[in-house]
Image (cartoon, rainbow over all chains, first blue to last red):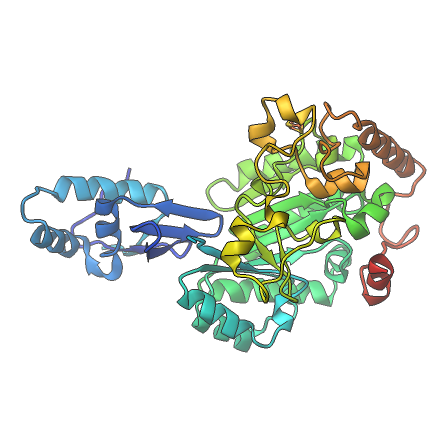
Length: 94
Length: 326
Ligand code: SF4
């Protein structure tokens, strides 16, 4: 399993498109053969992986929005899973 | 209604000059947009415009009976043109997704098709056998591969799946005639898919129009919501209540939905029958005799052969098509 540096920049893979789906009241990943419905935290993480911000900046931003949770480990774990599924790619390896 | 996928297929969607507008509007509405094209006429300006309109995904298909697929064997220009289009698609950030339609005359060459796909850097390749509707049904005796061909092809497909693991995904689909159970056609009638023909007629699948006694609603006259939920056509074979035996009490009905309504109609005369591909169908004999007839035709030499020998394949063209629809 990949372990990412704090300054890794991640982006949604070109095989998927992240979108807010009003009918589902959830973020979804759309792809050619279907759709993956994301839970709230997965959606919050993925929508920040914009190919611009570093992983550290993303975690910081999340921490600011959800100050009551210790989320770094959870975010890292989820990002690893998302990468293994091919949902996200490394934009600029450092 | 929660639909998230919109596919443009044909015929050839690129023939529509307003395709970019349709894609842009679909994207604006939040759809994941997919274009299925022969890629003939897909040059850089068009691709750029489609990309800007927000197109998400492209599949390049090599249709059975098309000049391009035939050219593949001979290595001529149309085929080269398609490869160039595939490379261009990649440059624009799309995956290269290739669909090859295979049948008796070309199934022995799937190794070459996969080599070629590997060379252009394809991400996903689908090798699907012809479905025996319309044009292909009329030519079934010369299109259906023999049992030996199928087992060879399957072995080759597996070999390539191993070889290209992690780089190129390969899907190989055998003709349903050689299966014991039918395909779960459209994942069930009126279950997931709604097709709108160019004239506005809404269909549960592209082939359904041939079914007699069903009045398919038009999106010009009715809301899509009504068509999907209320229209008699979309409810006709929805769920399980319409089924006859043996499907009606069969545990597999939740898996295959009794197979394909169009195939049931074409081969048994009644769209409400069990798909005869199923070995439990009382009319399974029509499939068995089609197989033996095709295998016999192949043995007589009316089948797999060296390029340039025997009569050429029957192309789909305007002349032949009008014969089919007459
Ligand atoms: S009898 Fe009907 S439901 Fe059962 S396997 Fe055959 S087609 Fe499917």
